[in-house]
Amino acid sequence: MTTLVMGATGAIGRALVAELLSRGQSVAALTRDAGRATGLPGGVEVRQGDFRRPQTLKRALEGVERVYMLADPDVAHTVAESLRQAGVKRIVAVVSAVLDERDARGRVRNVIEDAVRGSGAEWTILRPRAFASNAVTWWSRTIRLHRGVHWVYPQARLSPIREADVAAVAAAALTEDGHAGRTYMLTGPESLTQAEQVEIIGRAIGAEISYHEIPREQAEEVLGDHGIPAEIIRKLLDTLEAAVDTDAQVTSTVQQVTNRPARTFARWAAEHVNDFR
Ligand SMILES: NC(=O)c1ccc[n+]([C@@H]2O[C@H](COP(=O)([O-])OP(=O)(O)OC[C@H]3O[C@@H](n4cnc5c(N)ncnc54)[C@H](OP(=O)(O)O)[C@@H]3O)[C@@H](O)[C@H]2O)c1
Image 1 (cartoon, protein in one colour):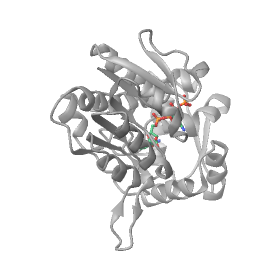
Image 2 (tube, helix red, strand yellow):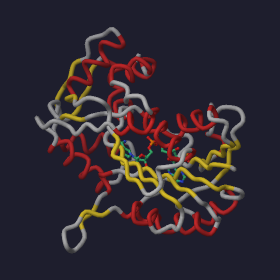
Image 3 (spheres, protein in one colour):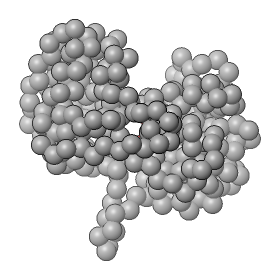
């Protein structure tokens, strides 16, 4: 029984591939460009495909029964239909609350979740809150260059989750029974301001890191340089603004599903010192 990991070259996907292999699973790794899929463990079959071009998924899904699914909202239903046609029996999908929308009656809905729930397969939805790895995307370049971050809302509180913990929950949902029809809200174990996260990274690399608060418009430019669409940038910055001086939600779902607690941000930073040095 083969499991296809979409986003296998990404932060969660790489950790998930390793976790599934350690559980003795047969794993196929999806990427848009096999030439970039370096550093994946031996024993993984790299398959090429692009979820924005569903016809490319057909070959990638040959012989696949379980899928760790990523998608964008505008193609989510097409991707779910491709999985249905390929006979996929179990889907574990990661979705972002930043993509939530309100319908005409004001109810919150998420297009990717709707597509997965309507796929006909057994499904589990993972809703991780902020990833610890956002610190690499947002801050690593300037920390490496001059021991500083230029970022918004230092007092915004988040409960950053380590990618390996999301992967551990995904692996459990893909390989064990009892997770079908469940939606898991995943967080790290503590509510931390962004300024505290930067201090923790500083302690991990043994350096003092300054936090220069920048206006929102400048953060929009930084995120735009990472290729993030304007609408997502707006929602992301709205989320951070709303989190200023507000305790972040902390759940115990990682502990409940994997039988061990979610790891701290300090532990994550210690694992990632090379990204910041
Ligand atoms: N950052 C957060 O705080 C946060 C919170 C909640 C949820 N999320 C969601 O979590 C998901 C996974 O994040 P991550 O950090 O593991 O990923 P990531 O490190 O950002 O990497 C993105 C992955 O998606 C793949 N990908 C992108 N477009 C694709 C396409 N059109 N077809 C096939 N594959 C494609 C890339 O594969 P190739 O480049 O190899 O093709 C890559 O492996 C994302 O969907 C994100 O929206 C993020």
